[in-house]
Image 1 (cartoon, rainbow, N blue to C red):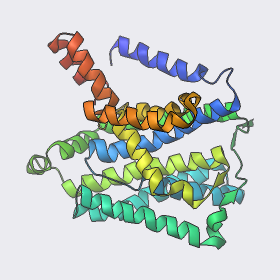
Image 2 (image 1 turned 90 degrees about the vertical axis):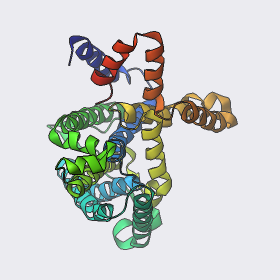
Image 3 (image 1 turned 60 degrees about the vertical axis):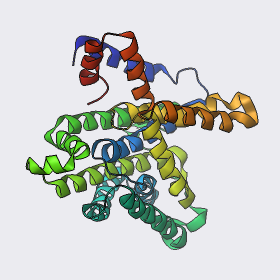
Image 4 (image 1 turned 180 degrees about the horizontal axis):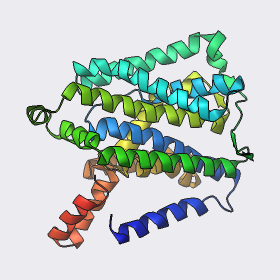
Length: 324
């Protein structure tokens, strides 16, 4: 990584640190939601953008993480242990669900994950003795670390920011590892990758499971943020919402999910001044973006960069920049 990129990264982190200062509780809560959903979208981007596997169950994995964390913290278990178990459980369920991915691909796999998300929603709604059913669970405590409480919205934002940065670092390491290169080879040309000795089935399963684990972490963070969860919070519509984040930001780009989550979470809030028209404006902007830039906002940025800079410099940025 060049010095200029390190400088830009430092400035971005500094901006995230100062972003909530002087803001009201609602704005800070919205920023926390953006960080949480960015983590979930990063996991889906690994599955979809890098491994090329379509999943409509990311909200379901958030639900697994959220309910495990809620049940454990309500019984006196510290959040860190509950979150770890949530991540491991989501990874394990992702492995189990990933087995159909060994036989089906693309839209067929999407139907499998859609069925799983629907099944999970029905289980969460009907097992009232455990999950609270449609009434959900309420009163989950926010964690404390070394005597520092995250009860306030501002402390919880910084807690969420730390989790977000750690997740980003882990994802960066995965994509720079042999696993990450194998995922990209799997997406670009599975037949050629297999001819080169890559074990397609194992890599597909691994990408699915790791992406699911990110969803479990996001759910574990959602629980203390909202302090109330119910099955509808993890229904299929929310999986589609996370999918929209990945597609709008730029599927297969490292920073795509963060940018897409910002658009999906923050843009509607910025358009509130239009009152009843904000959803129409928001939907129209998304449609226009998808028509003119199927690669999302980052893909649009690269197109503009290629027009204003020499081609050889644009190619260098493509290799060294936001795309891994």
